[in-house]
Image (cartoon, rainbow, N blue to C red; front, side):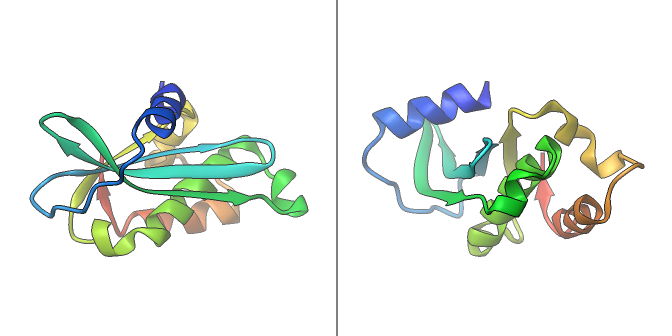
Length: 126
């Protein structure tokens, strides 16, 4: 799963790479009951190379959000942080939260998720 891959990367690769616009970018994100995290990777012939990490503690209000809201928030925060690398490039987005896969086509969304869906529509990812 994306979480186990993220855990493996966080514990084994200590040297961050430099971005290369000729290679594809990848984001892996996750949320827990009290925080969110993500890693920006670059897909290389030798495997995924970490470029940057981010994490953030959720506020009291955010801890009351639904799981899909927290997971989507992790993605939005990661994309905001690494916009300069991602905008104009197709990138891979990996999450361990299955309902997010259908987010672009989901009809029943609250205002927060709908706002984030519109924001994510500005990017090309798979």
